[in-house]
Length: 304
Image (cartoon, rainbow, N blue to C red):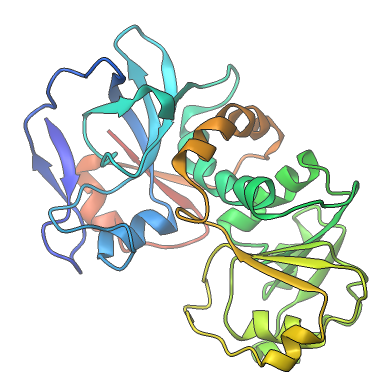
């Protein structure tokens, strides 16, 4: 059986041979893997830097598209099974049939990014008003782009996007935009109006600047989803927290459980029909090592 494997942290995954998994248990299903998305969390886990990485050898991937032994095309998500293997056994609770009309390669590329915004709203916010206003920090990222239509599905009336690339922001169908400056503290958030929820894929100084400068009496719920800034630490004075009507939460494995993901999968997959086609680069498993270092606007998908 073919798979991709990281034998030493810091190295790109390489094609390798492995024995086929044992016969699936009663609560599992055997999947012939078709396509696996290389998401940021997949890269971080494969580098050994994620809290769920474990020890090498490591088989990258935590979700994908494949076919079952009875011929169904399915999506699955699981941190327990390395996805980039020709065959895997997955807990039946983590598997859903792919809705008709959804392209399998698109689904492999965007379901995980879709999950990030969906779970942030569904499990890490509370009592959002009807027709809420959302701000996305990092709106031109893969996850940020997917979040825009999904926030509307989830009830947002107004979606504001913040990112550095002004021309890219202009093409995303946002209701308003904020151009992030090279020095984040120079970013102008003064015209935001009232924002009910912030999904932050950037973190770092930009988040702190937002906290310092927003001026509203209504509650703002902030959810940290990703760290595109590369900065894991921020400093928040206690006086700042006491002076703002602000709730701060994080969203990710641990903040929610895979049981919650499983309960949301049908709705997430059904909502993919509202997401415009996203840029995807497909490579064969044999080329995974060479393609691993390429990070652009296209989401990398490994075809098995």
